[in-house]
Structures are given as C-alpha cells and as structure tokens.
Image (cartoon, rainbow, N blue to C red; front, side, top):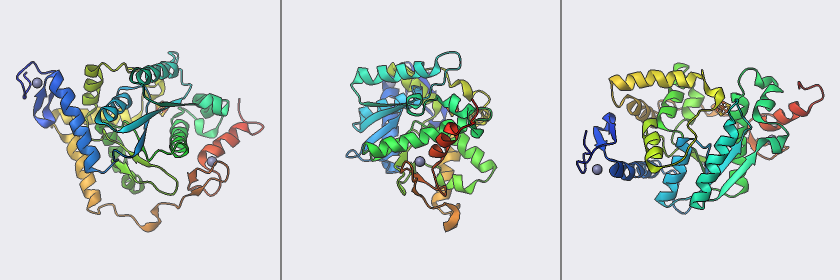
Length: 312
Ligand code: SF4
Ligand code: ZN
Ligand code: ZN
C-alpha cells in the first residue's frame, strides 16, 4: 500500500475516502480536514478564545494539539474526577495532560472535584440517589457544570470537546433508536450559546476514531490508552461495535449516516415545537443556567450529599 501523494509506504488506509497516506502526508492531511469542519460549521474564529476539555485521552489531546497548530487561541481544562478503578486512572490522566501542556507551554486550568466538594465523583455518586450503579450520570452532569462555569468565569467564547465521528454516530444511533427529538435537535457540530450556556463545538466530529488514534500516535502524543474503568459495558461501546461492522462492509457508512442526519436536520426534518426546550434561568445558588424550577442539578447534588442522614 503506497501513499497516494508521494508513493512512499502508506501508514494508513482510509477506505471511506479511497485514500492511503504516508506519515508525513497524513499529518498534513488531518489538520486540513479539521480546519474545513471548523470553517464549514462556523465553529470559532481566530479572534475567539477556546477552552478545550482535555481528559488525557487521544481525542482531546489530539484536538488541543490540532487547534494549537492551526493557530487558534486554545487553553485546556482538565477535571480531576478522583476515579481510580484500581489503576490510578485519574492521576494517570492528569499526568498526561500536565506533561502535554508543559511541553508546549500551553495554559491549563485544573478543577479537582474532591477539593471543591469534599468527595470524588464515585463518592458523590455513591452518596446520592443518582449514584445507583455506575457514576456516569453524576460524572457527566458535574463535568458539564464545571466546563460551563470555568468557560464563563475565565471569559472564553467557546468550549471545544474531542468527540470524534464514532462518538457522534453512537450517540446519534441511540437517539434515533428512541426517536429522542429533543436530543436529536441538540446534537451537531455546534451548540450555540444560549441563556448563560457557552457555545460548544466538536471540531473532530467528521474524523474517524482510528484517524485520531493514528494522529496521536504518529504525532508522538503521550496519551492515556486505558479507558475509564466505568466505561466497560456501556451501551455506546456496543453501538460502536455494531457500526464498525457496518463500516467494514460499507466503507463510509458512519460518515454518511452523520452527514445525512445533519442535512435532514438542516432541512427541517426535526423542527420542534417551540415548547420542547424548557427556558433557562440562573440557579439561585451558583448562578449557572438551569432549566430546573429551583437549584441546578449540581447544587441539588451537593445539598443531598451534605444533608444529615445522607448515605456514607
Ligand atoms: Fe465519567 Fe467514566 Fe462514566 Fe465517562 S465512563 S461518564 S468518565 S464515570
Ligand atoms: Zn506521502
Ligand atoms: Zn447551582
């Protein structure tokens, strides 16, 4: 297999694009694809400040690297969850992120949930009703809250996450199976700013997971290869496996599913009644936007944890 551009040995074949590239040309090609997506969906301008959510995995570190190389003003935010799983998952993640930022002299914001609340995320989940089983719902809610809070407090224009095409297809597939119109309406490359929520963008939404993995590897990015210990058995992983089978039989199936969805939505297929999204108002305790009638989900969680009689 040879590079289509120079004839040297190819390191990656992308059947969906009918393209094989050598290391040098792949490392040139991927940033161009990301820049095209940023421009096409009007995610962010060079004058705006971006806060990148970085977990320490291949996607978020590749995204930070790419935005930085493309000339965007991108700082990082790492949320220290305290998730251990018997293999120091949280501290291993933090180390990768800190090393990455230090090596490139990039600004990194750190939020330690245990320092902020007195408990790690698994402890918070275990001490509340929401924590039955895995801590994922508590984890997701806290991360969304912290990302928006830090972005607003520090004056960032936009929040960027490292969701790749495989992530987007898995979520889209789940939402389609249940025809969750509210979620379908909110899924896409850009979630505009609204009522105190900072704009969110996904610059890797058209990049296959194997391409971000290849990019991180070939770029020499030291990322954490292990997934979160709580991710095993997740429905999204099952959907990803299904879609990988489909992609194997029909190269380009994932990209086509995602892009066709965006086009259908643009054409008004999922136009929702005005009432589908509840109005946002500032939480009376922390000031963050919420659609809940009183306190936001984060403040309610902290109240429950601190209430006398909360499980220990
Ligand atoms: Fe949080 Fe891990 Fe669940 Fe992801 S898999 S939401 S990181 S607990
Ligand atoms: Zn080449
Ligand atoms: Zn609140």
